[in-house]
Image (cartoon, rainbow, N blue to C red):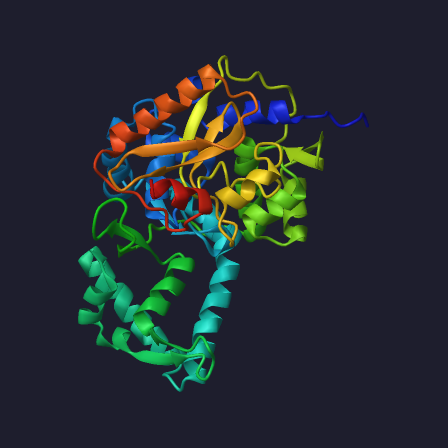
Length: 394
């Protein structure tokens, strides 16, 4: 067996530019193309999905309209729980793969935890909860989409409350509707529907999840990993385990199943999809991008030194490891951006290596591009980071 081919940081950045649809010639025409290329868009912060898609569209002017169409009219994209118990937006065709590969195990833990907490509080038992669940799902099917409060009009038992962690410093009152809908979301029975407010709103209606075929867990994990490596490879086992939330044995089983090819990285051994080890020609011209908090590119790998200098992290991440809005130049994170109260998009360079007039002009152009389609909408990331807060204050 020959030596593993070495893929350095420059080539990894070239792959990122094209496969993450950030270089000018790689940009997409529709939200579906973006989601298909990236596999998953972080959906914890509602605005992230729109901003991540808009940054990758050839013409971002119709971002809000096109995302609304894809999510709520055509249902070609769906917002649901996925890897690491996190909300993402996926292509609807990928629903079965996500559910079988990551959702089932998490769902079992979530339901068990809910029943445990209810029992500890003297709340009704599993049989009662099952009745409420079936009634709520039937009501949701009749309504099409509904808020938790609207469902409680049809099924009043959803308003039942119980004390969580009695006697602890974090004691609280939980409502059955909140916890049950969360469990049903992880189980793939319901998904988030239209927001109550604008596209930045975090208050959603619920809808019955699209039907999908049942898959074996190992089969689904292999398919998800194949797609992710095609978009993000090369990656190390550490990256893969972190992104998927799987056990290392599951990662290795999936890598073997898809015939992933090992390559040499600065971090050690990495993997690419079968047949994807050949050199990649980068973008024809340097490129700039303003990506939102929790963008799937910035959060795509756990080992990030090849595109994000370690000394920048304290300014760009919060204490839980969530990345804030980032400024990119030709494959590297070089700074951050924010929106001021008056709507102005402002940005700051933190890493000036290779930043000349061309870079500054390109970054400025991207800021104008972003401001042009966001318009009067005000954006505040759900997870605030030091630089973003500083810039937003003006």
